[in-house]
Image (cartoon, rainbow, N blue to C red; front, side):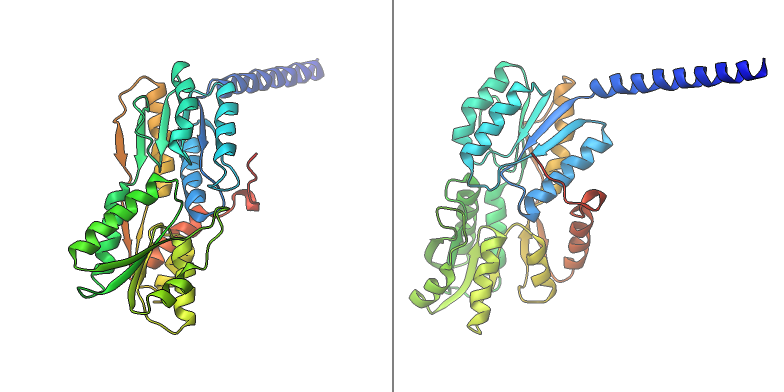
Length: 326
């Protein structure tokens, strides 16, 4: 009799556990589904944005995923991703469009299906977007120009090295930097593309120094081309200040080592986190403001270590392995 009671108790416990498990499964299925599509996942910048989104997924119990093409230049690949995700009927989409004009027609299909579309990092100025979360790139460029100008004298000559030509981010940063440099009396003698048509960094700094040997400063619209320019300058034994804009780890290490005076940094982690927060508000029918500025940081030798420690923490691979995104 005692043995029968034990068996019955065990069965009851197993049944309760099964019901609990099924309850959890159904609850999991009811979680809001949010997809984030970035421009790539091959730099600290985009990895930081993914880390912010992943943290928000965990904090708010969201069924979320982050995907991206192999590089920022794979515009067609990103469009294909947008089309495939639409078939999955997510509750909300967060996207950093590689080429906004190309993305808008498919984003309009999301709107027709009443799926909120939130833009991060790159604004499309599309009338049906739920919100834009990111940096005011004109302001960022202006701050970078002011920073570079503070290291120079009026009538000094500078070069501008531009990133992705199809990106409004690049054009807005250049515009802001020009305004600040010209206001400081600095002469912009050349503007050169920093990448070739395949997205590879060009050795443009070498030709700039040959054509303009009196260059006293350089502004680059992203840190990858900033560091490439710095390498050429150091190889020649020159002391020319170079200012970049993204705040990636290698750039911050260069500031720590006093190879670069300072840099202007965005907050991609915040963009990812805030994006998921606002997506949930949109899903729940709450009011979402149309523009959210994620701010700009000035990185100097005083705060470089703090920023670097933060990046090391958020970019640490989960579970000890690099996560592969399909």
